[in-house]
Image (cartoon, rainbow, N blue to C red):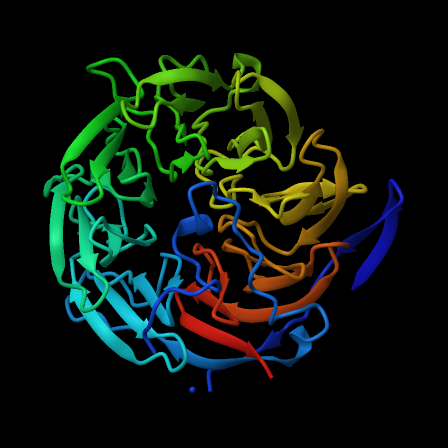
Length: 469
């Protein structure tokens, strides 16, 4: 059932429930094209917007059908992670690059789904943090100084890899933080960001059992040499994990979000913060920390920062989106876009915002819309003021960031463990109306992407290519 009201002269679509269409799967590499999606959140600014993609429109989403589904290699050992994907797909030059939960990394033909190359990197066996995990971070694809197309990805074994896109052979690998075999300490949640000859990647714990010293590390894109390190807390302290992916603006400044220190609501150092860093030295320039009155237990910025106009912003697990002036890192505006996450709740405000040049889109957890509580929502905001333009309730919470194509179709997947199946919702960016529901049943941790004239979705049920008609 869908009911619409008006808010500030704009149409507000409130979705009370969605009965979707359950679709099942049905069938070459080259130079990079304008329809590529080259990294997590589609570039250093993290806009999650692909203006070149105009194939899937509000008018033809009803004809969207799955052309292929790829599950990956099945688990072969007891305790190995299940097949499927937590990583988001990266699509460049007719090829999909993605790491699987089993620890395999794949190069697939975007048209057919056929395996072009694969490499086993490994997975982290569960000890203090079940379950066992393979790849979670998303690869970034870029050319090095020789012009060679390279794939950069953080492995669950604690190394940053530079793989040749041609065959996934290793050009170099560098230590990020090697996990213990006794406890689940370090784990690579953060996706690499490539900008100006550097690769930036964050360090965090697996599940805070135990907490680890956090940092952001930069490496030479060409040879993997470690260049600079930013440490969020004073020496000897643990926490303030960088679960997210660093953003880089057009001036080369780096923005990173941090988690909690585990020391209570008054957070020391650069914990629970959005920090602006020098791109070359990673020395802090300015930072913003969640005010003590708004801090919550286990408060994190799990969301990656998004650069939009003169601002940078991210949502905290307290349910508040903070927009900062990039020049001063002072608060421009803030908005409560969802409820604070429960202590160990799955659905929390951890999705990065999306930006199409005129409107900011945020998605997240439990939210009250006109007196009705929804497990999740997606909202359109004025990027300069945070004013609400429209909001749509969803049957489950959102962790994977929403994606926008060039003609106003938003793809947003839900990730929750309720009786309602998780789905990918296709939403009209102008009104918030749900245009189509792609029901897959499995929770969507990954970001869906528009590329190569297709929509690619990834979750525990596999990687799926969707086309219109």
